[in-house]
Length: 408
Image (cartoon, rainbow, N blue to C red):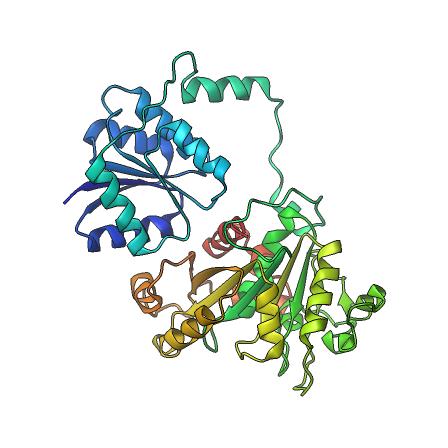
């Protein structure tokens, strides 16, 4: 039907968008950065351009301005794709010339609705850029005015960092900087994701990792630390308790700088109450910029209370075909709970061969936040207590985790 140019630096998202557009009868042309996308638009004049707002080198806003300012491309309909839903970002998209605005994560139905509407109406947003510098001139002036800054070394991710302003929220959030990681089945590598994600989030300030498993905790094993205590020390921790009680459970001596509240190393019948969960995470949020929870997949009172406190819920899906069996029921259960946080479904390749990205997306009937590749060095990472984000910082696995962290 239509030839649609998709511009995004996230290869997983490009693949997902291509699949969704193809199923809607369109042809997708992809570009992995803004400059490449502008050149393709000049050469091919597609029926429509979908561009991600946040990209390195040249942003989606600058891409829209560039396309609107050129006579050969000014009449191409433009759809802005972004994880930032606040009115100011919508306004910035409109000021740049975008005809529509859609927030991530985007469903197939939502995407098709926006695409069909914009194709039907055509380009209609033509801001007056008179007197304003073009995107390249503007960026050049800004770079000339700004002092040179040395890029932060990769190792800075793993040391205590100054607290940065939290990124804008993308959904109806709870108010606590809480990220819950939960597996959509057993053996999905949820603990691996939780551990590495907590290290990735250290770039936004100090992070705390909480292992809420009650059978056998694995986070301390991944970090190879001897826990000072566990969440069992906090069973009586409720509103009005001395917050210094947390110190009895907190382990802070891992070389990454991440703090840990470990789980018991043997199965226990105890559970944290909903009141304790709320008070604990409220107290932790006073001292940490991000709190990451490795949560069991069982829906007991502790898990439900934790999910209700979370800003973001990362659901991990393994690439074993058997992992897909229980996924629909689990997703229906979570959907019925009407949780306040935003869901991020990730495909974690725990084995070298298994289900594809497309198969996983069909199974969950939703776009995936990130496709995390298999990394054979994971075995060594656990045995040495140096998670992949430390031992293999340039790997595709680590890059995928860092990408996921941008949205949390």
